[in-house]
Length: 345
Image (tube, rainbow, N blue to C red):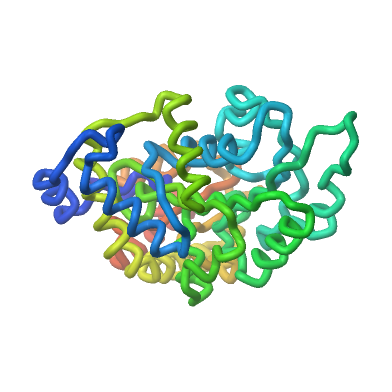
């Protein structure tokens, strides 16, 4: 990579091995089910997450849209966090395209939704109310720092869903980061879920693509929904080949990104003008703020850091989110810290 790019793990480039696999990929028409590379990726994704079947999609946003619409009909309701990616950052797609009603509950600092709030949000059988069909969690919870959500909590939400005969969907864009941080098998982590979406194109470095997994019947329905929203694909094995490497190899090295993030957080904590809690850095995201007396705004610092070939993104006048990935190496940490010190001192 030609810069130190901390804006997101979505900026990660495919690895040389991925590029070669894409060039050599065996392909076919996926709409006819004839792309062997896609078929293998879907099967392997389902196997890794302990589900029956998988579906390859263009993006995580499409994965969540298709995932929700495959569970819910027009006028049905999904319970999800008020800071969930699906609610905040996906253009209102579930409502605009599916007429699915979002019922939000507060996201807590540890990334969970209060269990009592979930229970209270489930509608009774009354013709005045929308039908509660789905509970949606996010793991890791990106808006509060990439916090991993435990198996115990997920199982507890799954038990509530089962008790009320509603489904559980997990926006697991970074579910492998969560599994690594929690030191647990990813299939165990999502065992209570009826469906899971995860991204290949973030920390796993594939250039495009996300997966949706669940039961065979659910995925059959999701495939129809994917067509409905314009997502039928043809010789897409070219990018699925990179997805296979992401799944088989890149999932094994995510701990390195977590370690780099923690080291960067600890370095930032030594700069007087920065407010940060390094112990909250559990995966590859670092949230921090400039102190009010820093003498510079976050957007101004972002522009200055570009002079050091460091690319960042300010959340507002004071707040930042840095994200580590394959292309952010341990030696980059000192470069970033030194540049921050120079511009802030």
